[in-house]
Image (tube, rainbow, N blue to C red; front, side, top):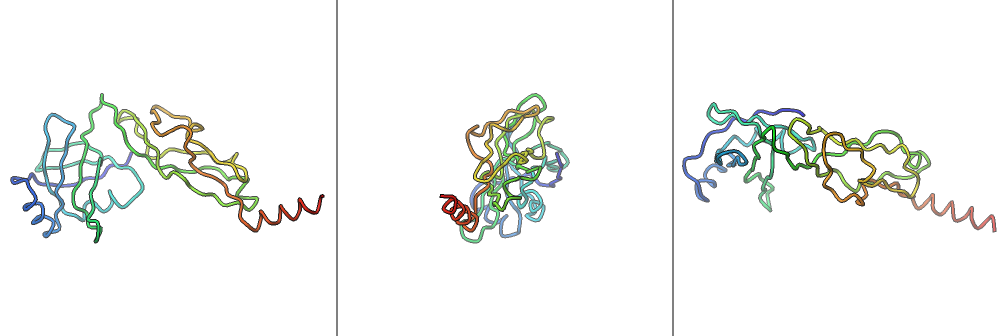
Length: 194
């Protein structure tokens, strides 16, 4: 798993007013929990760009006034109108405690249905898993080599490797749809055989 460093500073005053003042200075308030104590901090907004605006999962090395914490991003809140980052929550990683996290899906192989003219439609971009921090994958591979026209691949087809899948096993990950032109060609062919 990739690691990203974020340098932050402890917050002396908590509350709405101070959070607003921090945001006006392009600083984002945050909280780290899951360890022995909660740590309230703030960090420059620019440091969160590579963490938030990517589908990848990162382990975060939080450097708060010289104290280092291993964590993952648990939640982020955005302004409803201008989509500015308002607040971040981090979960401290502990080697003996399993973590629940959404991991992106990566498709491998070539679908025969796509080669026949179908369109691959992604239904799930990420899957919720539970694993120890040492076993957290960067992504979950889904093999689509057997995916035919009109068929879908479900979560139950994934072979977990040192992690547990929490997403509904009957949920479709991807489907190969039949385009209208191909459907009409098949209907014409079926009428011609009658």
